[in-house]
Image (cartoon, rainbow, N blue to C red; front, side, top):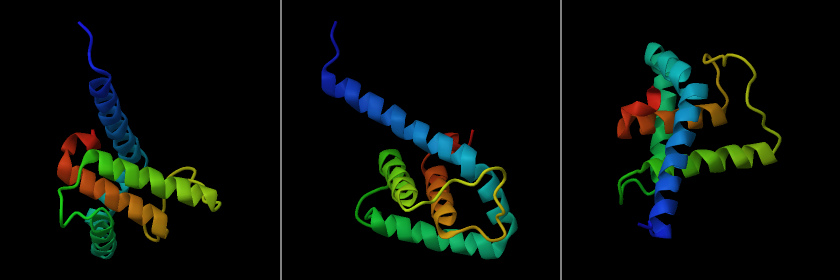
Length: 120
């Protein structure tokens, strides 16, 4: 039995999106969210960024999805890399994260709300 190409692509895209968010959560989300939950100021900043991400993805008109969040995160990283940003080496100082790390952390927070398995 053959599987139609559109089903394979959709399944592959879903796996890729989930993988992107899982990798992002491992790199940024786990430690960053722990720091945010321990620091009300950082958590407020992440919440503001999460609202910005929702606005950018029209989250008020349609539910956020794993694919939308993964695409957004990849777009952020690609644009930042084109402008010379490099991911931090070693642990992040969450007492003063840059704008991009805070935005990526907001994506992790939103992904956590969609599917807690992203924090595994």
